[in-house]
Structure formats: C-alpha cells, structure tokens
Length: 285
Image 1 (cartoon, helix red, strand yellow):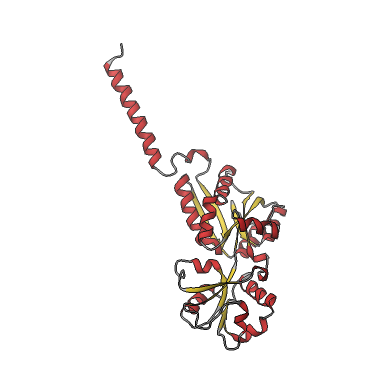
Image 2: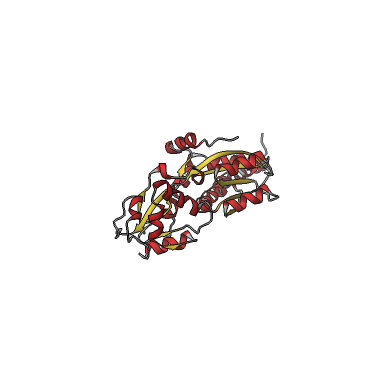
C-alpha cells in the first residue's frame, strides 16, 4: 500500500511538473531555447530593409527566445567591410553581385533570394500636375524632385529608369532639386513643393508616409536589374549554424515573406518573385 506521505509527495511533484509545462507554453521562446547552442545571432542588412527586418526580428525573438543583434546600413559599405575583415553571422544585401563576391571570397556559406524592390512614381495627394506615366515627368513645367544625390544604387537606379525611357534630358530640365535623402524628398512631395518623383515602393509603405502620396506604376522593363535584388545568406562566422539556418529559413518562409510584402517588397516566395528569380538569375554560385 502506498504511504500517504509518498502519495502526497508524488501528487505535489506531478502538479509542479504540469505547472512548469504550462508556464513554459505561456512563455515565448522557452520551449525552443534549448534547440540552439547560442542565445543570440548577429544580422546585418541593407538599410532599406530595416523596417521589415525590425518587425520580423521581433517575431523571431518572441518565438524562439533568441536575441537578434541587428544592424541596417548602407549595403555597399557593409559589403566592402565584409569583404575585408568585418564579421557578422547573417547578411542580407542588395545587388546579386555582392552575394556572389562574398561566396567567391569564401566569406559566405550560401545565399537565397530574399525579395525584390520596384520603383513607382509619386505625387502629392490629388495629383495636381495630372501625372499618370513616367513620360509625364518630361512635360514642360512639371516640378520634379529626384533622389539623384542618394547613395548608390538609389540615385543611379532612378537615372537608369529615365535613360531607358529616353526622357532623361527633358526630366533633368524639370528638376527643381537634386535630393540626397529620400526621406526628406518624400516630405517635399507630400507638401506639394514638388509635383512628382520616382522612389522605391517601400518608401510609400513606411508608417510616416503611408496614404500621403498618390502612387503610379512604372513599367518593369525600365527597371535596372541590379538594384532590384536582395539576398540573404549565412556567413562562415556563424557561431551556431543550426540557429543561423533556422533564422534564414524563417525569413524565407511564407510568414516571414508576408512581412516583407507588407513593407512594399516583392517576396521571393511569391509568384512574381519566382518569375523574377528566373528572369534575373538569382541563384547561389
């Protein structure tokens, strides 16, 4: 016969065990923290992806109890430093050639397509100048503000669109300001100081600008291919390869990709994204 004291002890133990499981289930990341050797991951990306990465990183941290040490900055500068002596564990960069260079230099273990950007025309609400197409920017008297002073590939990409459309000379005559900061430029279009500009769609999805400009598409054939592409890859310096792989897989999952779509990007996992992957040859070397 079971001793009453032993029975009480066993019931107490079982209750405590059940309570611990329930507590673990209610604590984000607690059930998952044991999967990895590390409890943090260093992630670098092109600054244009920052808003999307901040959101997706918060979700990953809550799910897994992992701290994401994130840096978003000028992609070319980050890439140059990584090709030198800088170290990070996961890198999401812009321009396919950068990812290929990191692979060739044996700094990156592999990369995957992440997302694509696209360019649009923006005008103040109400579109007072009656802009509909990129050719309308060349009409005499249209006050155009362009980010031609922005860090590459920003200004170069916009200039490439104008040249492909054959309207660069006429639009430059209409340009009332050559802006170096796309955020300042957005504010000038919103206020009506400029009648139109060309920007990445992601800017129109930022919380501070959403719904404050009119947006018009630009034909895809006018886009310069290089700046459209973002990739994500695991670096050879990853302390916990399982964690780095899991993070990249989450970013590339339908759930992670939906966040990038929300922020104005074309997800690599979408139908259009898959077409662009083939069209632009976004494949690991």
